[in-house]
Length: 425
Image 1 (cartoon, rainbow, N blue to C red):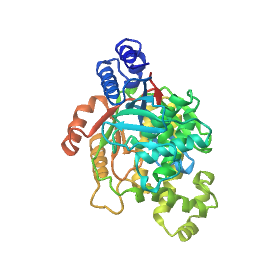
Image 2: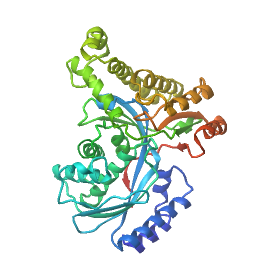
Image 3: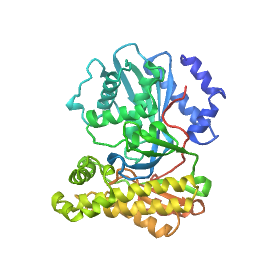
């Protein structure tokens, strides 16, 4: 649709059903205004054209903390907060991408090799996504995009994967008639992050964002992960899913994140396998004495303990969700949090023992909730957010407690939306 047609469409009720699912609410006035403002600003930047809207959600990791990169099991969900982009083809070979919160230099798609100077930038991700699409036989081309990000950097709901899958979907929608499947979109985003951006991530974030909904994923075969969708929501059981941004220092943590898969792989290799999912807890325990000697790193051994137990726990969480057993699910989530803290050791950086904002937040939750709800580190860890499942009748007091320590902008109260990254219009 051109500018005027799209403006009229947004103001009609034709978009209402889709928007209500995206934001998990029927109060659409504010969201429609957001769409119109973004479209108006894109028109000022780029002029008229055949415009489309792409919505890419944040994600919450419910279970399976750092199991995906070892081909294990995870539970995850897409959220009702998104990156929203309005896009159009520009009939050139240049990607022009503007975000309200940061700038990205134009990307010339005639050069698709890795550019080392672009490491850790959005420009590298765009180039890597285009390169991978072309390698796989898909079409690419230049486009103009304007994005507004509610999935903020450092919010703990995977802003990088949200951006990656959104860019893949832009290429998919504009040039490939939606031929790229959700699983393939996720893998393309991961490829760009691993080889162009320079971060050795697993596939959990991209998969949860691309596939969407409340999902259990088995990464035993990462080329074709087994996915099970659930109609499940914490709100149905009287709980609110909350992410607490503890506002720690995110700078220079790449080595901490990279050490987790690196150290676990050292253990796997001593067990004669590439990934721990290809071995077993029994084999690990049987060889524990020699493993400690061969690996020479007890933290890596403890992280392997975490993987085996967490992988089993994610399977039990899946069963609890199937059986709609909320109490069992919450108990398992809490155990997951303790394992991440004690064995995986990703709650604070080893190099910064004086900076433990996540530990403080978890201590507050332990004191406040006691045997109710659940709480655990969220996502990669070290700094950022914790995830808390709070009884709705205790929300007021929980907010008051966290506001007093981390500020009134520290809480993100979210719902689970039923689908992942999508072309809205």
